[in-house]
Image (tube, rainbow, N blue to C red):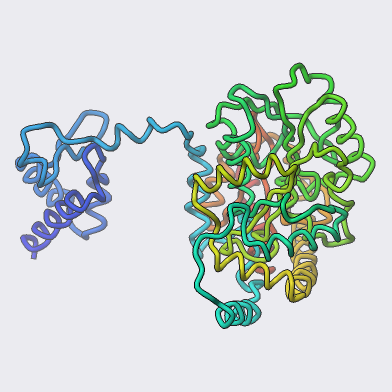
Length: 469
């Protein structure tokens, strides 16, 4: 039996190396991890590794563990093998923070209580309605190729009609369909901004957890926010150059949930026009109001094309559709459409046609109305559980919409420790540090994804962990 296991271990490691799962330069799992995986003593693992090392496939290195140095093909060659691991850090696009990468991985773990996810719960996905929409789109389907550079004409017409209800009156030629708002930010960063430009943004901000602007050579300048978001006066005090842009999230800000009032929106637009600072307005949560409709977007006040407006169906309907849009002056949209064609030759045609049907049929309005009611139930349950379990330790504001409660600790504790201990107990939260360029005593709690009972349970777990900290 031991001999059989020994051979299985060697064959398994060889297979991982040969098929490229563990390329040259990769570090093997620890001896302890391999022993646990195969249910053997570490001595069996050591013997297997020694044979693989004798074959020239692996090598033990001080401080690095056991490294793959060859594969079965490179052993036949005289030239040294390509080490892909050396290439990983050479791309121009920066990697996400390690914590963000870990959270992205953990969000696919269905065993965790997801107090992290900025995504509607699966039970809020309108499955039957989506089947009807897809069936109808399929019945009317004709042979199709790539869509127009700006996107499917019918979808852009429907988006224009939808936006007119928000006070944004534009033609479909001023709309670019994108694969979500994140792609919109990427296109803007590489197509409209000079390297070295300054991006003013809220501090904290969702964009701090990304590397979109930094990878394009931009500098991020955080602006402190209050309960209404960015204060225009704080921008005016530090604005030094015309080579800058303002990214803002005025409606149910991520991560704080702040809602900017109508007066503040006008003041912000006035400042931007006076100082010649273009605005990127992110409105992906705008339909997800709970208590009452929010003020109209800043874009609705824009008379001079100063605002690029981003919207999406990812938060309100389903992220899997990958449908978002950019609204702006035609010259800008033409430029970004050309870049998008260079990037992916257009968003999925089927998704665009399905999105057009959702907007034109009235199904989207019915769906979003039901979502608002459910979000209110979950938000109220989260706030009640926070009052019961964390009122001694933290403080927060009641969000009027969106997905998030921004919790600030009253006493100094390690948010990194709280995040790690919560994860070990099966609860995933987002530490505030990933949204700011400085230490933060906050964490972001999502009430959109977990069931009510899990929200309450997860918050109770956090109470016990905070006491330990």
